[in-house]
Amino acid sequence: MIEVDGLTKHYRTRVAVDDVGFTVHPGRVTGFLGPNGSGKTTTMRCVLGLTRPTSGTTTVLGVPYRDLDVPMRRVGALVDPRARHPGRTAHAHLTALAQSNRLGAYRVDDVVDLVGLGAVAHERVRGFSLGMAQRLGIAAALLGDPEVLLLDEPVNGLDPEGIRWVRELLRDLAAEGRTVLVSSHLMSEMEDTADHLVVLGRGRLLADLPMADLLGRHASVRVRSPQLTRLGTALRRAGAAVSPEADGALRVEGLDPAAVGDVAFAAGVPVHELSPVVASLEAAYLELTGDDVEYRAGMA
Amino acid sequence: MSGVLRSEWTKLRMLRSTWWCSAVYVLVVGAFGWLAAATTPSAPTADSAVGVALIGFAFGQVVLVVLGVLAVTGDLGGPMALASLAAVPRRTRLLAVKTAVVTVWAALLTALLAAACVLAARTLVAVPGGVPVTDPVVLRAAGLQVAGAALVTVLAAGLGAVLRSTAGAVGLGLALVFVGPPALALAGGELASRLSQALPALRVGEDAFLAVPTSWPVGLAVTVAWAVVAWALGAGLLERHDV
Image 1 (spheres, each protein chain N blue to C red):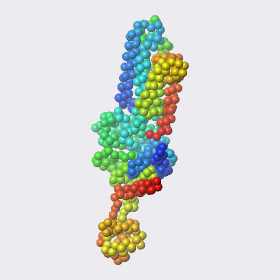
Image 2 (cartoon, rainbow over the protein chains, first blue to last red):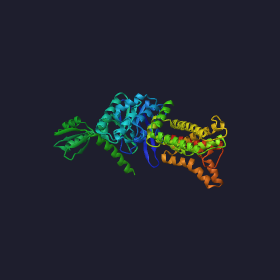
Image 3 (cartoon, chains in turn green, purple):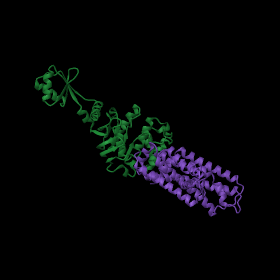
Image 4 (cartoon, rainbow over the protein chains, first blue to last red):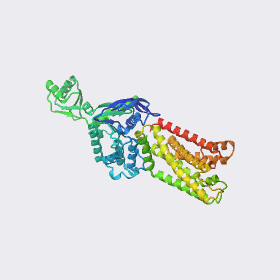
């Protein structure tokens, strides 16, 4: 469980996070989305006690992170794949982290094998690619077998196989009842991973909702009829928002396909096509974050 | 605490720079000391003979500035700090253990080197009555050398925490201990010589290296003050700053 309440962070000339509050629950993958610079990283660093909020509070498992004595046993974090000393080997890096939290040396070997770095564990991390560095960061996050995981852009720089591996890993970890918060600026990465979404834009909370709701919210029905005007009037009377499509069909929002069919039948209008349209998440996400940008530009 | 201690020792030990610094320190102090003792046929007293053999510390301790700075900036000066501080959120404790580990290592090396220097003075320099290793004067010179080296390392670690930049902290450290005191001594004048005495000059046995001389209790107290203030400032900034 991660709780963020009224979190605000000002940098000298910029508001990075503006009164953001949400709760991340265990047992599911929570996707933390927002365009670049929307405040995701700042929020995660505040939760981890790395950045001091201007106001507001964050807790992990009910306590502020900095009050945890050996945090890695409770909370695992990937903050930045560059968070390593280039002159140390992967094995030495993980060993030092494990020792600082009194974790057994066997955990280092476990996570090295888990993330697939076995062959390069004793090489200096200076020469690691971004993908290898991400795997090393994920290994560090998993060292303490934690019940809470925060991963900032974990698939950046990974190849398709690596992306799929991370996706399955996150799903498995959530299925074991852990709390998983994973950030990304790409909706497509979240589509098959996250159960729940927290969306930021320009430092503000734009949405905190189950994935299915975001889809549902942007679902519509496409309907064709030779008597479009009569059908449109009947649908509007039934409470739907109706707009014409370019190809002469109607786009109906606010009613499900069965209800649209019933309205048409009651109005005595023939229907030539009736189909549900599921918005792609990418489109739904762009609409959500795009609105915020327009709103802000309008205000300025 | 013991976990953090082991972790910090691993961090220090698993870097090549630690071993390079240590090797250069041993080489510079050992070579200069042996050379100085070998080219000094005789000395009037035991402590002057030991003082000659310790001369290598004047240059060798420069390496301790680098070692102390690197121990801190290598871990807290770049993105690595994110991992280190997420693992150990109690920042002052982390810095304290980190400083302790590198300082103990520097003190250990210095003790071994000081013993070797005393041995060189004893075997290579002719002194009436010899150089008895249990002589309080000899023990004091060696002990002061270890204390001076440890304090320089603490000061360097503190500067590393204040600036969190390797180049900046090494530069400032060398200016304070190695360049400033002799330069001010050369400049002459009341103010300059006072300043020279107020800087944490590198010490060779009981004396300040090329700086305006101070008695060893004063010199030690000045260096202690600098080390404590720099370290406390570093810890305070580390606690307050965002990573």
